[in-house]
Image (tube, rainbow, N blue to C red):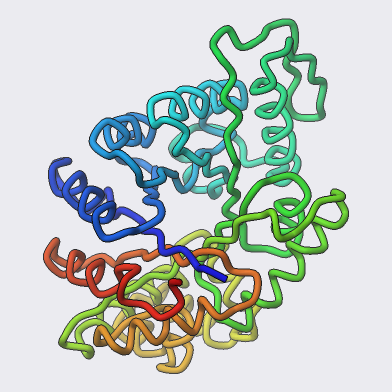
Length: 338
């Protein structure tokens, strides 16, 4: 079985778009299967994807995530249809609920009933992309009386989810799952929820594309790579979400995640970073020398049910260090590519 290698673009770390375009074009030359980009409070992801579609020819395009709290399901369907047209069919829609801080403090919406909202958004998107008049009366969304007036271009939907119920929902209704910050054992356990969801929906789990976002840093100075990774992961556990902390805790590390959170809140961030054990760090990211990082990526790729490894990044890296990591993990350099 072939495992794809995708790339996640660190959009927020650049002041202009030229380095991002350069990175995507280089990824296309190196054989990366897809690139994906985040959207939080910075640049608009739709405009960026359209720009990248115009500057590439073959590489797949995705996003991590668009939310039904920030865009209506009908608009999400219009966006997906248009990006499919602009990219010649290379686009996959990344969908997720985002998080309470972003939804409530940035978009001014109440973060209410996230799983039901996500499910209904997927169902509305499917109806809009059918090209027929939409008549949907759900608990969260009621849409009816209008139809898409351009050519429908149905788009695969990938859901970013962490918890067991959200991943089960993904298996029932979506076309792919994008996990992040999982250990290999934690990933195997959650894949069981995905398979159960697919079976509940009468679907074949093998038809879903599972693409793990694995933050990577491959440098000749392996100690610097691990230092950068440790700071980023401690920050994510302490302040991001709280979904990442809860997810890592569910994987058997509640004592560690609680300690990191408490130290961070007390203002002792150096101690919070030191509280992340070496073995847990090595199970959550791929950081070190190029040889060490390739070995870690290959270890994750060996997890049954994984279709792609998405090479993510860390803050505090230079553009040159990001390119070095991308080169080190090019599909021609890793053993699981056939």
